Length: 259
Ligand SMILES: NC(=O)C1=CN([C@@H]2O[C@H](COP(=O)(O)OP(=O)(O)OC[C@H]3O[C@@H](n4cnc5c(N)ncnc54)[C@H](O)[C@@H]3O)[C@@H](O)[C@H]2O)C=CC1
Ligand SMILES: CC/C=C\CC(=O)/C=C/C=C\C=C\C=C\[C@@H](O)[C@@H](O)C/C=C\CCC(=O)O
Image (cartoon, rainbow, N blue to C red; front, side):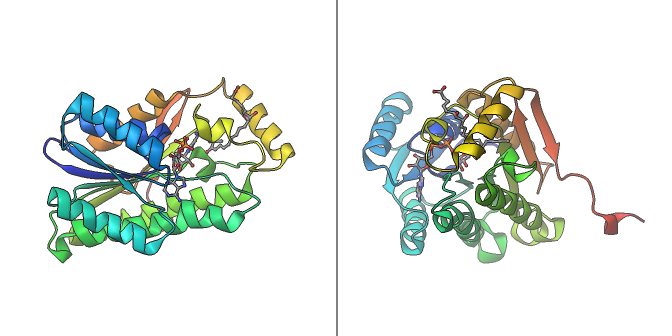
């Protein structure tokens, strides 16, 4: 997708991977709305971006993606303010194995709602111009991962993306849908992980980090995000990001596709 002059919405964008993706969008000449529950960090991030990229290039919207009215209101606010919507990044996510219903609400239900809202505003069948949705899952949605509820939500996002990215849907709505699946990346997500899953599972994760060669850094994941922006012919695919590089999944056809 050529981003110059386009309009984007990124959830969970006050810090971390969402902030990194939002900056990549700004660098490519689009305007971006950053949604987050962290008001102070969100305001700080938008102030820094405004200094760097210019006034009216970005805005912060205080929004809890699990609140249906807040998320719907945020999408409408972006369209009203910037005059349209071309790119949605459903990034907000948490690790929360003990309050597992919250994990499902943030990581899966809100992503379904974000996709539906993106299709509502961008879908050609609704008078939109088409567009792109990039969901943030994890390699935990592809391979076995110690935190079962977190893994379930991420696998759900991969499945959601593959379904929404089927050719017959693109023919109708003109919206490409992809999912980014990073491995362990050094953000607050990691440093705040203690107490969010069992000690045993966290130790397993640490062992996985060590076996995998350590942590990715945010720019490593942003590189995968930019590849998804550029690869217009990969609708429905998942892009894995590890220290070994980038790898597409989900372009293989299902058993019913063979002649
Ligand atoms: N850090 C990692 O190792 C990996 C992270 N991911 C995924 O990447 C995404 C971003 O994670 P990070 O940037 O690492 O985490 P982070 O914790 O640094 O940032 C997450 C952001 O989302 C916001 N957020 C959380 N709940 C929210 C809600 N209900 N409504 C709105 N905003 C909310 C937080 O305030 C924060 O600003 C998540 O979906 C995570 O599952 C995927 C693979 C690896
Ligand atoms: C296959 C896994 C793929 C992606 C990871 C993911 O999606 C989510 C990971 C969520 C939590 C990971 C927590 C890891 C915790 C352990 O590594 C801790 O020991 C790390 C704690 C601190 C490391 C940072 C530091 O050294 O200060």
